[in-house]
Length: 158
Image (cartoon, rainbow, N blue to C red):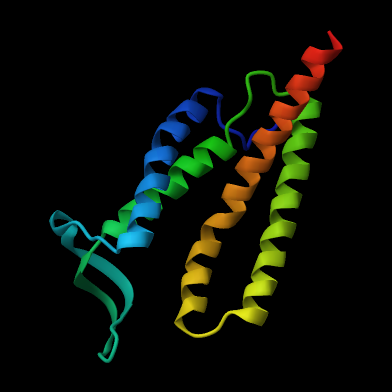
């Protein structure tokens, strides 16, 4: 079975090289709220809704893009890791990939349901921001765990 949507295996290393520092930077930003002064710039915004201000449409606005840069790097790295072929991409790996994706969607939606029922106020907004990343994180963790577990089983059987 050939899957034309997957990238070549070499992109997985590039993805890990981007994902790990972006994850660390994201954790630091979440904890400290730090914004790099040199990332203050004018960007084109389709919509910019300022707190206690007016809503701007299709205009350039001056903002700090620290969170944007880290988010783009994280998503780019995670997508390279998640959507790159394994060295040997056979039907067994394809099956693990599919079940990991379904499992990640199920777990993500259960977590989202819990958030809807038990989290309110501005904290809910933070949970929704983190929720954008959880499907990829859960998929990568589950897929690599199953690959690791199955590689140990194959070694034990030899």
